[in-house]
Image (tube, rainbow, N blue to C red; front, side):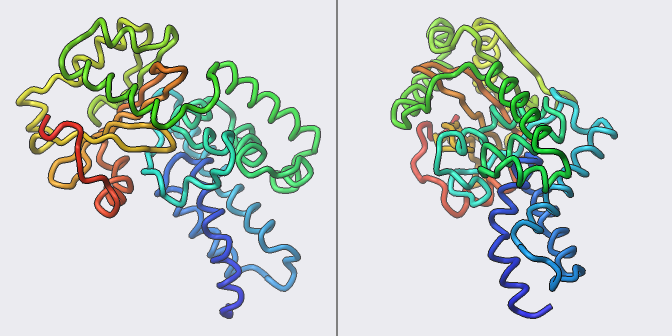
Length: 312
């Protein structure tokens, strides 16, 4: 393989990684899929590849579909038992982010909803909504008909829209204020204020401090507020588990405001918020070390210095 072929692949690497992350919900798995795509590119008869970008997109998409199907067959990706890997804003895997639809497609809330779609529905949705491929192009990538692509994306859009039921994109400053007020109420035990800050259809999911075999899921404002209040209650046991008294920061993760718990520059937990119309519509709590590795590395490079709470 000459340098021109390597350069051609490298020019597509970022886009392939972003596509793979949206399909797999895991940065580590996305990187593996991109590396496997490079190996296929090395072995290919590249002189017969008319449009390298299209060829590479097809290969990485098919590799991701194989991974999704294999994980489902092994019951490793059962909806309700698995959380996507959070990424600190600025991570190149979160692109493209030019439109609201593109930004929303990589939010943890939407990535969780995509887990409920079939692998093909998920691929069609991501290719169409996040990367603006035409139905003809998607048909070629997935070896389906154009009408099949249209049907898949219609079903996927309908399912996502039915679950989301949200307004437009939240203003960052307003969303931060909501999270700051929510955090203040949570750590001070003001349950009534927590309830008032939640939407009627709020949902919360957590990996149980990284120890639960299945996700913990809560609905109704009262149950979510009780869960949050208990989760943010500082105890010696929680501090031992975290390895110290975490500083709590507010940052942006997958395009959404989040509370990040940090001990000695080590991210030990993240709560990501879905904010809609001035209230919290959803929360995702993540503490599993393997799910926080990439976010933690980015935090050490770029994380804000001033916490909202110095020692929890």
